[in-house]
Image 1 (tube, helix red, strand yellow):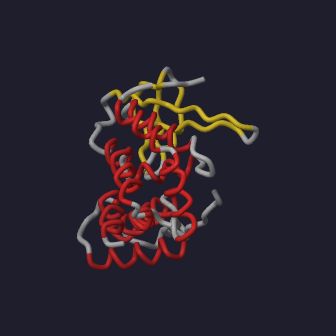
Image 2: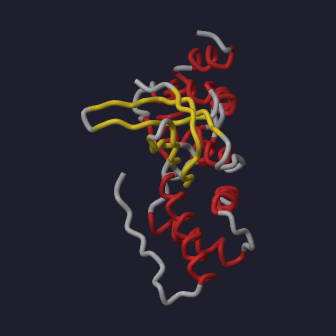
Length: 213
């Protein structure tokens, strides 16, 4: 089992990172929060990721976190009934452990609907599970013990600026899909924000979209 990897960033996209170590490049699934944090790292710097190594009959998958605390929070979330690894990762993209504890205490389940595709019964189920497991969250806070998406690529008839713009839009859409948006909704939100925003960084564009939800 892999519990941590140290190496250089070879590729960073919304949803995953390629980390090279010892001549081997690993693809590691990350949250949007971790993506934003890794953006500040230079490709020449070594990065250490705390790894949760998921193994099942369907295969293996690596989930990476910059802090041990984020990894442990992920494990707490995915351990709740009905909350799988990808849902746990989406929760980490939007809420800290402190946020979830506050939401559970306040009784405001609707706050969880900030997460794309988490509405009505789904948000209530997550809220119920968190509420039922407040002791686990308290212990954590105290420090104690998809479907394939097809998106057309730019053609060679486009000029460099158009190619860059198309690529940026593609990354934003893929990032939103990874966070739980339907493909059509992701494309609509991307087009809407790109029309009025001068921002060129896909991560910041996604952050702006999420703020406006």
